[in-house]
Image (cartoon, rainbow, N blue to C red; front, side):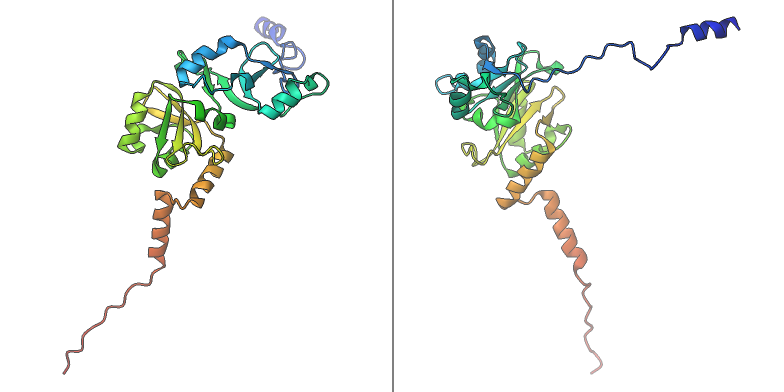
Length: 247
């Protein structure tokens, strides 16, 4: 009985967790855009080889939270009309920038302060000289997968490029479309320490990218095998003709 009484006394009262402090994630979408601190740029410029003569650092902003977890890219029109003219001080600016860089949280990113974000990558690639690989159709398609993709899934040439990279964020571009910003045939990837890569692209955009490749006339090896298999299954077996030898 004493043990039962002791257990009862220690049992929590009321709803489970009612005394716990719940910390809600701060909503930054309604906070003003402010210029990024100049100190964030040197390591980013060095890591991705950004051409400082053309890279528009003045078009990158953070939310006024003081943490600068995300660097947003604002086009010249938005920057000029909403930010420079002080319009955001009178209205709430919500969707006006694209995520360009996100602060790294992965353990493999000790040397990297920020990673590339797919949303605004088309405005960064033209200025990059490091951590960018060009891929043929097969290798580019091979990158568009969920989860880990081992190096040996790719061509030898592409594998060599991957091996030369240190772990961290990098970009894969489709051969022939490196300068075609409008097509945005770019993939934000992560090179891991275990000779694998991850595609940091949403599933919806992955599907859109594959659709664009099909529009360019590309058929993946898997789809090609499925088509051939279907054609083979649809054929009627050949009827063996026998020669008349009675005469």
